Length: 226
Image 1: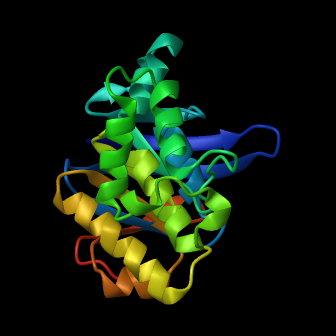
Image 2: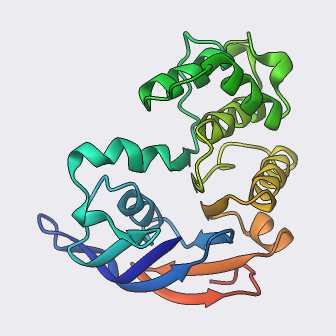
């Protein structure tokens, strides 16, 4: 599903190596944590997968397709195949939960019954009854659930999560992680960048550790240890 072939990302202006010779493969249907301290390279890795930035060296591929070879006109299709969840949920405040999802469907060019598709995604995260609520009327945990539904509404085979529980209390964080695990069990490949030791140690899955842009550990048995 995902492959990094000796990927280096250098920012020329600051001569900073965000990633250094990172090499790994993630199989379809895996659940993988990317852990490391702030500045370790987690967000850079996710940005490369979304092709928001390009590697300085090496190859980034999804489903055996080299992202560098994609034309700009092909990027919308790529991003329909990737769901993205952020720490700050990034919901549109003037739209209801349902409208946030239908907006995402329109933006990605989905053709079909958008409202029905959005309602199905809200049911998946247990929030169909909140479909008319605006973000300000939802708890932080509910807002993040809507953000996950928005990421899943196009049925992407790959879900990327950048610190998805960073603003949540421990109990709500665990609820979100259980939801992501359920999504994974149903077949979606899930990659979670996190600094939460408790969550990684509680639900052990393959764990990749970044330090200073280098991949220093890749452990199928999981566990947070840096």
